[in-house]
Every structure is written in C-alpha cells, then in structure tokens.
Image (cartoon, rainbow, N blue to C red):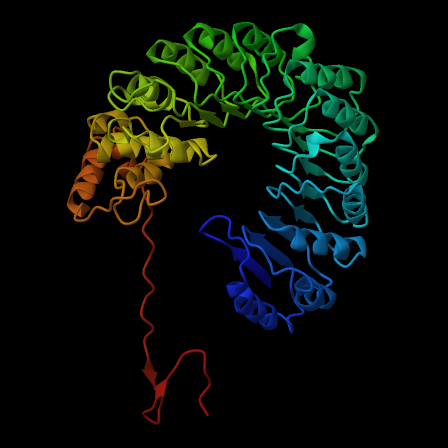
Length: 505
C-alpha cells in the first residue's frame, strides 16, 4: 500500500487549524503494516513532537518501504525522515526524492546525517536532491557526494553548482564505479565547468556513467576541448536549452558522424537555424546507432525540410525525431511536404508509400495543430508498430480505402501469387474504423461499408490473371471410383434372411 499526500493548490504552510486533519491522517495509518511508498508534496506537518509521536511509529511498523518522495515539505518532516533513515529503518529503500525543499541546513551536522542516511541503505539506487541550494557551500555538496558512492542515479538539478562544485563532482566520478545517471540541469556552470567534464572523460574512459544531463548551463561547445564532453562512453546526453551555435553544432556533427554508441541526444532550445540543418541531417544519414533525437524549440523553417526528408529516407534506425515548436507550419510552411515526401505520400503511386520511412515517429506539433491536413498523428502511431509489414498495410488502407487519395485499381494486383491471395482479399476489405480495424491509430468509427468491401473483393478476383489456373484439371483426368455392388441377401430354408459372413444359429 502507499501514502499519497499531494496538494493541488501549491505549497500549503502549516496552520494550527490543520492539526485535526493531520491527527486524523496519522490515526488512519497507525495499524498499517504493508506500506511500500510514501509521497508528500507541498505540505507541512505540525511542529515537534508530531513527527516523533505520530509519524515515527508508522516507520517502525513498516520495514519494507521502497520509495520516499518528499517534495516541498518543511524541515520538521525532512529532519525526522533523515533521523529514521540514519537508523536504517527502511531496509529496502530504493528511491529517495528530497527535491524542491531548499533545505539550507545551517548546521553542517545535518548534512553529515543526510550523508550517513543515504549511505546506510545499500539497496538505495536513486536520489533526487534538486533545488536545495547545495552549490552555496562546497562542504555541503561534498558530504552529499560522500554518501552517494553506491548510487546508480543522482539528480542535482537547480542547485547553483558552479565550476568549483563541478570539480568536486569530477573527483567523485573518478572513484565511483556504480553511478550510471547524473543530472546537473540548470546550474549555469558554463564552459569552464564543462571543460572539467571533458578532461575527466578523456582521462577516465572506464567510468560507469552512461546518461548525462547538462541542459540549461550556458554551454557553447565551441572549442575542441569543450566538445570532448561528447564521450563515446555515453548512451544518453541532454544538451537542451544551451547556447550551442554554429561552431558548437559542427563539433556535435563531427561526433555523430563518427557513429558513437549514443542512443539518445537532446538539442532542443539551442536556437538552431536552417544554416546548420544540412550538416546535422548529413551526419544523421551516416549514423546507425542514434535512436532518439530532439530538435524541438529551435528555428528550423520550410527551407530545412528537404534535408530532413533526405535524412529520414536514408536512416532506418532513428525511432523518434522531435521537431515540435519549430517554424515548420502545416500548409505553406513545409510540414505537409515533410510528411508526404518522407513518411506518407497519399497522393501518388503505391510504390511511393512503400518506399517511405516506416520506423521513425516524427513529432511536429505540441497540440497536433494541422493534423487534419497531414495526418501526422496517425502516421506517427503507425510508425511506432515496430513491424514494417503492418505499418505499410495500415498506410495503404488509409490512402486507398479511407482517404481515397490513391484510386483503387484491381489490375495492380493481377499478378500476385496464389499463396498471397488470402492476404490480398483480407486487405481489400479493410478500412480505418470499420469493424475495429485501426482502432489503435484511428479514432472515428465507420459503419455500413460491407457492400463496398465485397465489391472490392469481386473486382480483385475477377481481374486476377491467375484465376483460370484454379480450374485447370491438368493432363490427367480424375479417375472415377467404382461403386460397391449391393450385397444380395438370400433366404435360408427356414425363410429367414441369411447375412453373408455370419453363420446362422
């Protein structure tokens, strides 16, 4: 079971009028011995001794808590939970979230206790300590890092960490063998801080780190030294909302063109323009490892569409491409052209659809504005199938039998082999929304299409060039089986019937 206390009204400070409600809550949990998760957001518990008398007994009776999420809470709750964790009261704790509390403990002993509380739980894998002003004192940051030496994921976003703080984190990474995910978003340590990352990565290529978030830090990656933060050991890097200009993008392109093992890259919000589109898309054509690329919130326009189309038609490994909130508009702005030429050409020959990209989910709009003209949402859902044959079938049904932008021509299928005829007959009876077909991608339902479906079946069968071969006997005639002669029954001397093969009694 779980406790979930989330205020929908924002931060709610404690007031004495709330005491009866807090007492009622604590009383409702006093006999609960099956808690696995506790979540409290934007709420303040009553002052001491409420935690000791009401909350601490809950922890005593529940030794199987795996998740604690305390966001925007007061110090009484934070101090109490730290004291409980320090005594190893949550032996199976896996996830601890103390973000957005702006703790600012005045006593360094509090940070020492926090460090010990984290270190006392070997099962603890994830800690989120975002927005707690850790960067204001490197001694505080040092203690938190000391207790985090066995974690797999550490989130330190929005902590005012400067280049000195980054140096501490680099020392921590050099000796750490378990941390795979590190997030330092929105700390503004700039290029000076990223150089420390670059040199550390270059000297220590055996680190466990695989996912790195450096968004909102004022990075440019304009020099070769700074660009070495793009390490081959990383599988995921977030560089969104930085200041990566033309020179920085050239370094990113050189990195991608080398086909590193990187699977996910976020370049959203870097004011990238058409002048870098050809470079970036050219690298994407040669890259066979990148699966997810976010280019949202940039300044690409219709002029970049041909480069994007070329990349999508020559890359079969990219699974998602986010172009949300660029300047590629639905009709005259190039969005329709992008969908048609790269993903779904519903106005041309069948071969055009078959040759389209059937694996990449392309996001072009936050609120699906313009989808009526492009059907980009339906196409995105089809490309998410992970089954090329199924995706092509759905696109053909959409174009020929639902949108009817490609005329249905039975003669196009006249040379299909006999083995495939059952699949063809099934195909020509399908239509988006008819009898549940396409319900996973098409919202509107359709009724009363049975006659048209049967008409298409008739047209296909009668126009099929292989039809006569179904009725050919071949060189040998089928031999007729001889009929068995009826067995004659004879009568015995006593007048009774005598059945052959049986002796009379």
